[in-house]
Length: 474
Image (cartoon, rainbow, N blue to C red; front, top):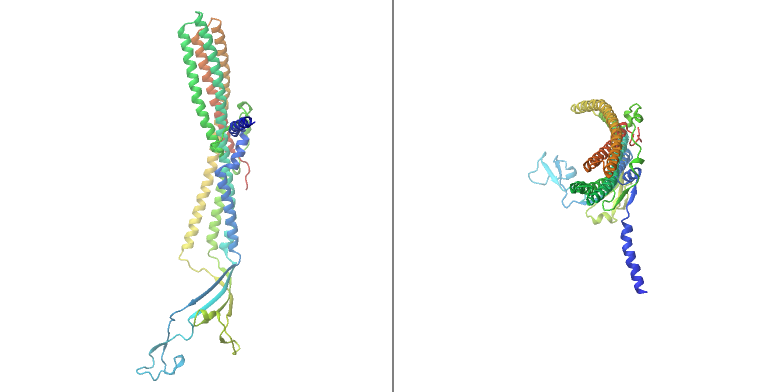
């Protein structure tokens, strides 16, 4: 029984790592969906959106009442002395006529009898904006800044979709080419065995066997190299998806299941507003307009209400601030020493009169920056039109090349098939078969390269038309 248990444990221990390494399969749509949820760039852009939302709330909070409370006690070990001019009548200083040498007009000093050494104060300060033009513009600017972060996030999603799509197309194309290598190696291996048999029976020379053997060895070596390239292509896809690099991944589907690009799909008129970069530029222009508006608002009077409420007391010592002593109350009667309340409130009107022409030049700079953005908008429109035209030409050329290379591949496959049959029947040469196989492999490589270029051209033209990530928030 113990031996059976040990065998079960050993079997489970061997199976679990294999199960843990089972690769997860992804289609293109699943790769994109995973990347949109896991991409570091998108996560950071979402954090930027949250930062922008917090910035809006921060700006709104400026217009709410600002309330500060303070409590403090202080002790003056040595008070400032009281200074006065001697007038001969004594006054606060008393009768000083008995002091030798003192004359009317002399400056005399005495201990500060208006203040005790220790003091305490506890109060609340309240400020409320009643009107401020810059604050109102700031509210608009904060919302526009939030809008900018949302559109920047959209552009980031578009870039992630583009990068993941191209990486997926590269990996799926290479995956199909690995299958072609296997098929080609199988055919050459069959030819090699046939040629060896013919050589053993005296119907083929040894050089023909060597020639096929060289072709076979080269194919095997190329396959190993290409598999290593495919590993890098898969790693690139995982990187673009932000998929764990240490975990395996598999691709679902084949190239035949991918909808081939068609130029006729892109006959609609170009809409600049479908482009995230154009929307971002428009939003930046709106921010610049608000900046100009804020420069004008800085010259408008602002009105603020304020109030100060609190309690204060004094004592010869700090400990005396918290004791009950005799004190003269407001009604002139003797009562217990305590903290006395105070309060004030009012409004403050600030009227800008002269700023040394600084504001005028700030307005001028803001206007010039706005003109620059207007020029940039026109430039971007031209650039987008050029990008679309270039993308259409690239797609048109790629589709034409794919069709031509597909036909060439079919023709080369037929030539290779016929040439091999002729060789097996003794009416063809070994060299013709090898050349036909070489032409077929070249045609296959050209076809898959052209197909990948067409798929990339489809991604580029979708991006040029703003169709990769169509959710635009105006």
